[in-house]
Image 1: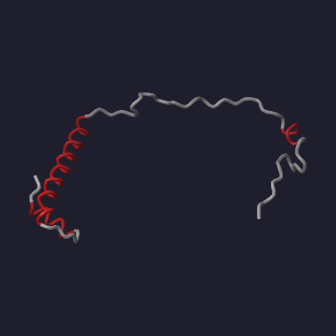
Image 2: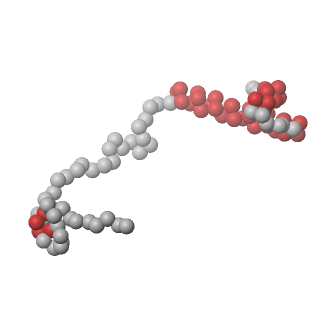
Image 3: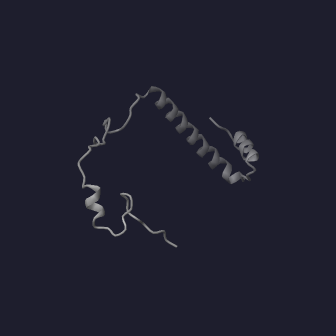
Amino acid sequence: MIDREEILKIATLAKLSVSEEELDSLTADMDQILSFADTINAAGAQGEDFDSVSGLANAFREDLVIPSYPREAILRNVDGGEDGFFYVQKRR
């Protein structure tokens, strides 16, 4: 459990000004935060390892090579195709 003196020490190190009215509330809040962190740390040590929530190992499909149009047939419809590529002008 964290006490008021530790909160004042942390505030001094962080160069924060903490009033007496805020000190009790801040102490209780910090104690809850540290308790929650302890709970998370304990759960992480006891839990099982898992890759994903859904249990899917690989949700991607396999790549398939399929035939395409011949390059000459594509470039036939384009003015200025050079060396098997489309000619694209640079924008200014």
